[in-house]
Structure formats: structure tokens, C-alpha cells
Length: 78
Image (cartoon, rainbow, N blue to C red):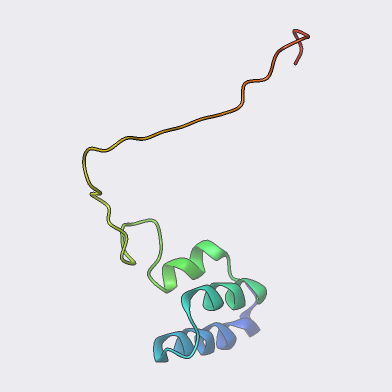
């Protein structure tokens, strides 16, 4: 990230903290001026560490259904 973009990032973060822009817009604007989306996400508390309102424990039970199309193989290299 270029040094001259730091004031922009701080400005976007201030706008986010005041509620003027949402989290998606903050990450978008920060990425447009050169900050990685991972770093931007951590700045606003939505990194992969369980923060940001994500229920890490989840609930037990239920049914997980997964499906995929299976194509006929007509050649060994496919």
C-alpha cells in the first residue's frame, strides 16, 4: 500500500465507525485504494477469528445434503 493512501483508509474507517458507510462499502473502498481485502476485513472486525457476529459453535444435529453432477467418463484422460 502506498503511503499517500493511509489518510484515505483512516477516513474510510472513521466513516464506517460513524455509521456513514457499511462494512461492504468500507472493504470495497479500501481495496480500491490498495489495501488488501483481508486487512480491510480485519480492520472492521470481520476477520476469520470468530468476531463480527459469527456463531462459531453453531448448532448440533440436522441434515447436511450435498449433491453434484456425475458425468460419464468416455476417455481415461478426462
